[in-house]
Length: 177
Image (tube, rainbow, N blue to C red):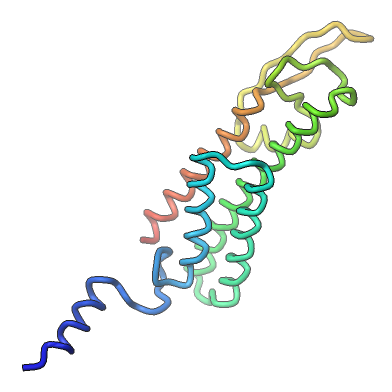
């Protein structure tokens, strides 16, 4: 008795070797996007520099763009929108990181002296702080004309956004296994 057909069928069932399924993990049209988010998360856990994160975000955006051509159903488009949201969260963290780099390297353009490790909340950073509900601190400083300004801990901004992106990804995985 030839067991080969039975073994092949068992392999397909056990390994989930279906083609282009709706879920978001391996064996679906979303596999590459899923892997790019997981790669970004792993890089953030072990340490990645500013340029490296930019490249990872670019890879996510590229994979999303490729899947757009294949996504036809309403569910596929919803999943893509969730991936876009997650990618945009990482883009926001990169923007905040860029602002931190600029403020540290070119502080003469800031209206105030910042304590080490803090960011001045300027017009570019304000929408990000608001969107992710990041706690700010008001700082009073004697300057020409007097005044106060808001600031935030530089590392907190990225960490909070990364945590929220991770949570969004977790929800996406649970809702589309």
